[in-house]
Length: 155
Image (cartoon, rainbow, N blue to C red):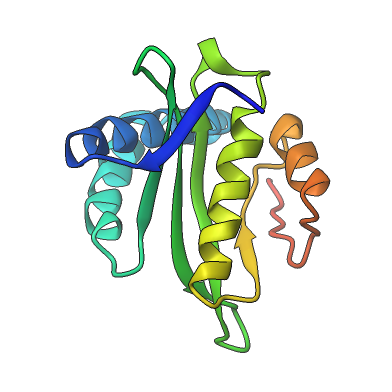
């Protein structure tokens, strides 16, 4: 197990978490989207401002021994698309580059899954970018399976 403590994020850390979340979003844009990077970045921050305050959202930080934030997970409650069933949802997870490869992402995910069970939720979902094979393999290792697929066609 990694040498980190997972704890509730402090209020003063939420802005850093939000900025990291938007930065990761920008890294996952395709060529067409990158043409509108500034607009997308601005709108993503605005959406996050509204989204962060939704009831049920919880933010957990992996704190390294030196007190530095090594990563975070944003957990909340959502609904399945067709049934409306309440499920836990991993909205975002990030391990900072200096801490990757140490099992911190797995520890954060396991913590979020435990929180979901404690909230009485029988299922937890997430979305992952098709290109993010490292995250994809972690999620599969933890038992996640594809339920829906978003598809697109470019002309």
